[in-house]
Length: 446
Length: 177
Image 1 (cartoon, one colour):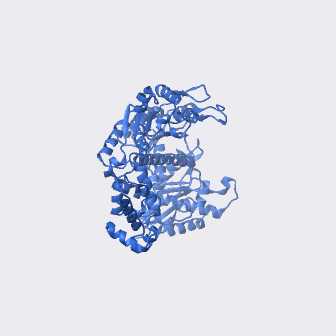
Image 2: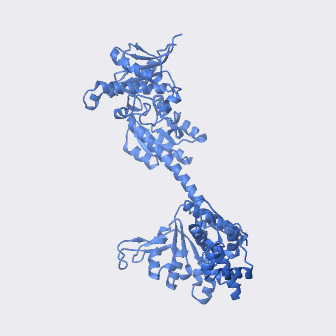
Image 3: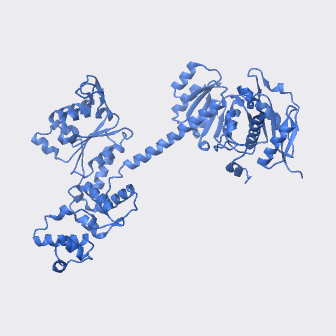
């Protein structure tokens, strides 16, 4: 690790520079020296250093002033101030100005080693943190928003456009279309990405619970409130709050929510102190809020307050061209999480999936693929691995004969066209089954 | 032409038997013959009364000035408390990739830490510091392997933790493998 760390020594005494230079070279650091602050600043204009070890007392500009100038250059270097004269006030000043540490000359060899090792650790932790942060951002960006259909591309463009603003967003779309993923994508592409994205599923909470959940409560606010509790608005400070199923909140909560959105201040349940929080609000619903406004079940002022930007996520049936991509994505996702080899889906199964009317949208498709991987043969996903039972009653099938044909076909597929097993399952004899196959023109290759 | 050797320079305060043992270990490690030489210097010239210690930088310069075509590296051996301006003390120091180094046994003595005198341990520590400083003159930096003699040591306990030998990686770096 030492080999990657660079150190700049700034001291007007030759002997100090040489001693430190030799000491750090022995440790494998990359070392440069400057004999005064001016020279150091000029070196820093063209070169970055991880650690700067600067004497506090130097002719011309002193170490503290140099440190301030280094900070104004936006350098990330860790600055350690050295002095021959220990004084609490200068030490405090150096630390107040953001110096990493302060050390009195001459140092104990072990103290110097520890100091530099700790600084080097901080540098590597910072680099690691940065790398992880970038990784998380790239993972959270739009990884789960799979699709290259025109409608989906339009949605992604809208996400990109609204992410940069602070405006409230309403995401509409049927259940299972991925509204929460859109909210995550907006948050992780916004300048708020390093602060929390706090989700609240409004539909799952009663009015009083939702109130306490959103605004928090003070100790003793109600029976069982033994401790103070931060609300979701408070937790989302600097970040984003995602209110899912916004259409389900009561009239009273609608008024409270409107007030909070307008003032960005609120009071905890049972408290009297006003709390301010800087959050962006994103809501989602699968209901038509405009109609609810017309019916009088949703406040018009709140609707307009929230509906600054509206993103409508299309149902899966309107972007069927994305299905193969989604299927591949979910297979990869679940095979990886189950530590299995990536399998494929046979063409018959894929065709069947493409024809299927996904009422539960992407969520239904995802569950279907997960189930198929769990119960399948670990090689490929076949039609019999897919749960299409509820598709049995299809609107397009009217006659009993058609249903029988489809059912017989499904059973045959399920038992790999083993006539004995299929006949047993259908509770008919083998001859009857052969007759049905002939009658309906069923073929194993289809 | 005579093969180049490593020179251990000391004043008359070191016993030959003590130095022979160190020389043997150096030869084992670096594969160079070791010669013993004497130097007569007035050590008081290097004394800093404010620190009550001896200036290692100046002593190193003095040792470095002893040059001979037959000597590849020279290490000055001392019994006094050494310092460099920035550090409170040092066990030894050497010119990185240079020709000279110095080592003192002053702070290697058990008695210095209120413990019982132990001549064998002193020899062991001293040998390790000499081999370590020689490593720097050959261009080796501190090694993170705990048993390697090039591991940085700021306390005598650190010296006791490591061996007298270079690790495989350090040996490879200077072409000993």
